[in-house]
Length: 241
Ligand code: ADP
Ligand code: MG
Image (tube, rainbow, N blue to C red; front, side):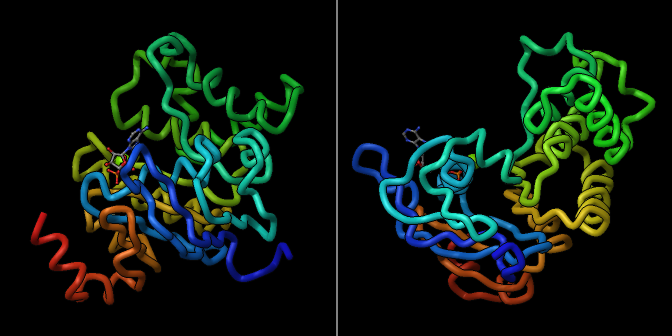
């Protein structure tokens, strides 16, 4: 099953909070090795969908098939070990950790050996170009360096599918351009599949081969960037925002 074309299949996912459907009957697939975009207005249900994929919360209905395995009912930790993860935001309480120590937290998800975790962390730090800063504390980093360090925490888990929820927030146009190149290079070099939530639409349009549009918890449209950017329903949803 590991070589099926789609690394992820989501079928009829529904999640309600109180009376409100944050996700309503959401179905889509992500091709193995692709960079997919997930877009939609504020409150459309993008983060809720990521949380269901990661196992942060349990959907009311629907199934999630990852790499041929039904993961709907398995824990967050086990999903991570199977290769489905997101970037870890380093909270203030950990801000005195060095980049290396913070990335080792990610690396420990697949080893209990300190030496192996350190080696894996250093590889991941190298992948994002922070080798020279590996011993700096998190509190000493600027926003852009933190974003790259967060990306390294995720890479250290050796993901097959990496979910990025607004990783680019707070970055300058120049930094965004650099992050686009970095993600494209990681996708090429490591074969990692990405699903990216991002408000800056040109990030989505330049990186993604498939775009999923959510509105009010439902799938509004799925297509290539060219199809999405000319879709009447998508244009109406965005212009009406
Ligand atoms: P997006 O990431 O697309 O901006 P979210 O997934 O964060 O949207 O939110 C979708 C909807 O679900 C919103 O109406 C939001 O208020 C609601 N929601 C999200 N998380 C919770 C929660 N834990 N409890 C109650 N409502 C929530
Ligand atoms: Mg969100």
